[in-house]
Length: 115
Length: 112
Image 1 (tube, rainbow over the protein chains, first blue to last red):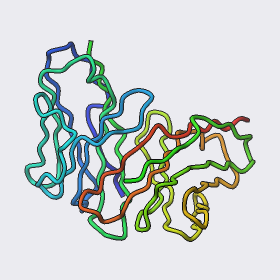
Image 2: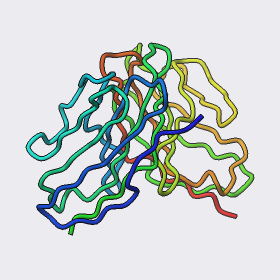
Image 3: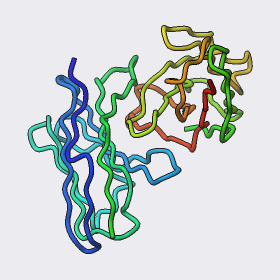
Image 4: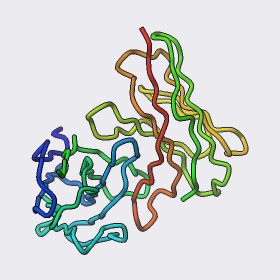
């Protein structure tokens, strides 16, 4: 079974530039998550999709971050414009929708450095 | 979701059992205990979860105290590949938002 795919793996940009990350979840997983992980901390949820609808985006800085999952499969996360404090690893995860299973499968992440 | 407290770091000799504690004294009756781990430069990986009974799978065992205020993740024979940050999370499965709230976890170093 293929895992969660993310690209790019690494990205270096200057502040005020724009950047986009891509995620392809495990086939059949209706729920998709984007997390931000700052060095030395645990991942923090930014946004959760179920199919192509947003379930929770309460921690997404909407003035600069946006995400979409138009066809309920792949997703993109965009930052425009980037700030120095956005330097982090951006993790995508997916899961089945089930009351009995909350196992989330994570991708390898995209490491963003903002200079 | 209830908060958890974990030691920031632990060492374990290779081949010995690694016992990782987690305190969740404010856990409510319908909250489960989940454990994930994150190996360097990888995304977190699910290990195990439980409600009140002890659980075991191919990766680890989870021991939850009778009052459910604390738990211990046991890796029975730690290897160098078990070096990682281990996260203890408590939450209600199947709640409207399936998000996991990660703390800083315990950094386990397995020493040769």
